Length: 345
Image 1 (cartoon, helix red, strand yellow):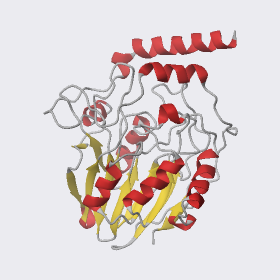
Image 2 (image 1 turned 90 degrees about the vertical axis):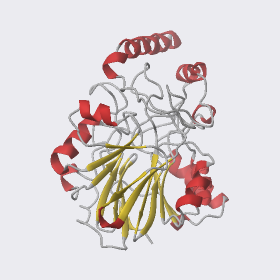
Image 3 (image 1 turned 135 degrees about the vertical axis):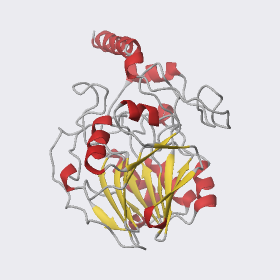
């Protein structure tokens, strides 16, 4: 009976999601064919699991433990800015990072909402409040969005940021139209390896990632997913967004290295037979750290929303085990607390 009820619930959810596809779907990108765009959809070099495997996982899930949701504690109010030549990183939550470098304040994949969902009262609920209060943010100059999934492109948060700071917003191809529909104008779209100059002598570069995009069941891969690198007087910082492990890390290192700071995802990695092509495991993140030749890495995408089968503390535990096994010093790969900020060596 439990399996039947679960299956019925999943079936109903799928029907509702498909039926609401026109309402929630992302606008389709139109542009020239490239090595990762076939004129209709974007793609990875490594194929994702077939849909049948994903549905099998939904029916057979064995999620690890998560504690009850908590509010706070919150981190200290970040500094207003850092000087030219300095770099500081603050992990807010999930994939939301405040990167401060060369007098510039950059926010990645910001989400302050209670749920990552198209509907405010349904969908994955956060288990920890954002580590920095929204009202404690310093002036935000640039926001980067790696892809259109609800835990990375949170429209309510983006509207708040637009109203408060009017930051420059950088996105992958095809994503600006959705933001315009939400009243957020001026977003700049970048293809992989395209770049744009920013204040303070910093340049932002869109870089490859191994993932996918969709806002509903009817719009898979019609917009581009991406990572971002930031090159300035203080060095290069790399934000991976969501990605599986792949050869793109070595490419990024070759083109943009040396990497002073890498922000690498470690969560939503189980079961690995489903997730490994689109989400790195903690061990994969250590491999990425080495492939990038990063001076310092910081873990992201864990401990906030229960999106995979890994438990709340499992990603950090597995990260520490992988670092010890691979003889990487723990002070080279940080797992920061919510709202914790550090100067980057």
